Image 1 (cartoon, rainbow, N blue to C red):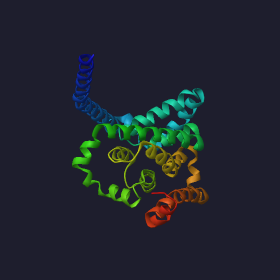
Image 2 (image 1 turned 30 degrees about the horizontal axis):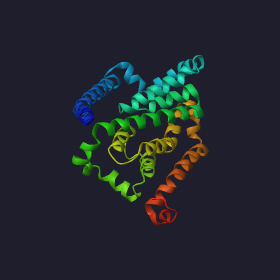
Image 3 (image 1 turned 180 degrees about the vertical axis):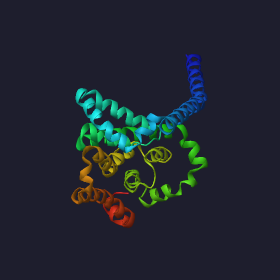
Image 4 (image 1 turned 90 degrees about the vertical axis):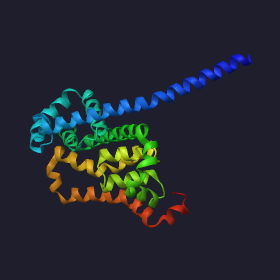
Length: 254
């Protein structure tokens, strides 16, 4: 009986060791595939005529009626394809503003913002998890000091991941795609990334979706004031936590 237990234990150790040996290979293979996909996507957007057209606002306006008809014909499939495309762009660290404009054309402002937020949240969490799986240990040992601004912000906000994500989203000091991977290299949790992205992206996403949904609203001071007020309201607790941390400690919020 003892021999059987020892054999099982040895087999378990061997299996665990085999898995540990495979992890670096899997990470390197995935990283290579990810880099190839990013380079291919960049080549499409920067070098191909169709890719450059997608980044041209005048061309997006011409696509607007077609996108609207497509959504009307496929009311269930269109949101799924839109969210899937958004997630892919987020993971590949590519611009998503043009997709938000198309969401305005296809879904209208309110629904377009909703689906854009779903896509951005899922994309942010997936990129975050990819980053954490690929390089968190390597990052902590080698290049953490180079991200002083993000670390300083984390410390100032009491290592509250939600506040850090919200601050980055609302201040836009780091691009959306890059910030997703940067978050994965910190101690911020996936739920902080998800909630912080869903709330913090609202003002910027709403502005781009409005370009497609009803661009004339962007010349209306009341609409712009409303977007600004939302941004300020979302920033207010972060600013207070940064400037008056003792107020938050009194209510048990770090």
